[in-house]
Amino acid sequence: MARKLILVTFAIFATALLHVSMAQQTHIVGDALAWSVPNGGAAAYTTWASRKTFAVGDILVFNFTTGLHSVAEVSKANFDSCNTANPISISTNGPTNITLRSAGSHYYLCTLPSHCTLGQKLAINVSGSGSGSGSTSPAPQPAAARPVTPPTAAPVTAPSASPSTAPAPSVAATPASAPAPSVAAQTFTVGGNMGWNVPTTGGPNAYQTWANGKSFKVGDTLVFNFVNGRHNVAVVSKAAYDSCNTTSPINTISTGPATITLTNSGENYYMCTFPSHCSLGQKLAINVTGTSAAAPTPSIAATPSGTTVPSVPSSDSPVTSPPSPSASAPSLVLAALPVTFLSLAFARLLN
Image (cartoon, rainbow, N blue to C red):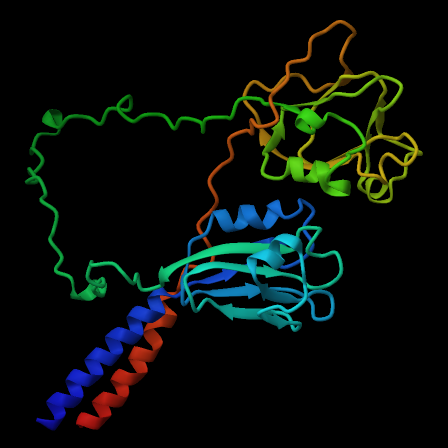
């Protein structure tokens, strides 16, 4: 009787432990961006969070260098105003792991000066628990416990003894591998309604915020709308872009609106060479990947006078591919380790 009681207790405990371990998720905040001041402003972390599902019991991992950043949980009012006084909790040692212990909205920011206002802030919504609390569906059984129903197979007919009666495989029946569909070339109006100017709102991150979430490909076109004599657009190197050095641009267009067709994949950098315009935020860096369908002949030139430039409304963004599956999915191997050890100990007890 005692052994049966021990067996039942062990089975209940092992099942609960495995179920909780499988349900828990670990989220690396920002993924490759980590926990830092983002180039795209607060939209960078908002975009990251919009692709995730958070539940009670999940873990947030904030990767940062100790002394350069911090992570504090704050109220919504303090989050909206970037008020770093009186946080709910704070950690200054990186990396920091935070376990989500309650459902609802949670708000996090960096308390170092100006970091929150530059976009180092994260708001998430936590629902239920990792094990699916509130659901009336039973917990999933381990795969080994489920009966496996073999698929119904068509009877196999033995091949005829005469080779001449066996139908030869049809080469034409095998469809050729179709190339992956390409995304049509896009035309982007830089800055949307803001045009190509010294930004009055958004500061130095205004154009990076505009570019965030857009997918630029070889063959796409950028349209820079500006008034002649007040601005220009120059293609520059990364070093010149970072330092706002206007002395040796790769190419400069002084007639607006200017159209630039993207011909090179990788990072592309643009700025205005008028005094102080770059340092005040009139600069743009984008990452170009892949190739659009029907990519036009590579060119980089000003729009001829009198030509109407097609414009895409700022609210229209190109279709982006769905995010890859989260790297934070729980490991079934790690989840099963505690149960394995408990099973070995229980076997020794019965013997």
